Length: 305
Ligand code: PAF
Image 1 (cartoon, protein in one colour):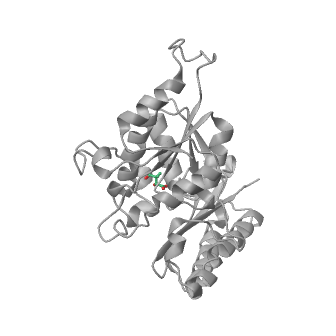
Image 2 (tube, helix red, strand yellow):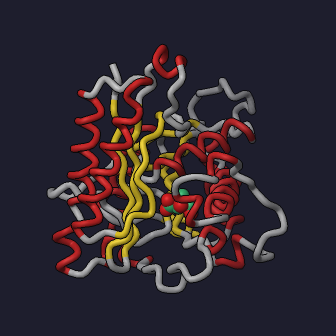
Image 3 (cartoon, helix red, strand yellow):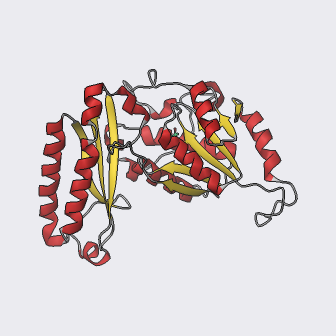
């Protein structure tokens, strides 16, 4: 079973034992120096999370999984209070994939003052997609991830590609704040029918769960159309037609779409510039849609050759 810590000081004291004391020089890979991986989560773990832990195990000697429902990334009227808290079950699941430590702090341990007066501002990249309907969400996510990085001081941290915008913001955070941490991106884990695994899928009724895979099917369809449509500056109007058609199909299935957009892999807009034609960046189709009580996210990369 993983060792569970609720206190920052207790986790730090344990992890210090693995960092080794032979030399402080970062190139010292001698015995006694272990690689530490962090997998940040909000708990209510599913196979997607367990896959992140498996990936972390391949990258490091010691895997720390944090379980913390972070209040600063929830907006007013969102599901902070009802977000499922299932620590005992989570720990049992983590034991099956060999996680070494679970860090499950209280809100007071993480935030002596709430809201914290010190801020992380995610910037322009957060003003689009999920950030438009969840203002402040990525700033709140940024501060908690930043704190977890400082508490655990991992060599690597693993995040899922399902939350594509979150991942892009974390890469920006690591770059801008000079964290010496390698970010590993884990592919989306899907149910057999294609639905991307998410803790929020459990908000779906039986009937909604039947409908939910439509989101992935429609993204795949759109991605295939984009791949074969030789998108170039004269054809960006055609992109709008494809998007409108996909929007219609998803809405008709019963979803209320928050956004359905095509961006470059770096989340910049697809524009009709010569640059776009020359560089042919890979594209990504991203969607967020409400189905009953569940807000579902998905995305699909499109390799443009
Ligand atoms: O993706 C999540 O579960 C959360 O946003 C994270 C990264 C654990 C921060 O609270």
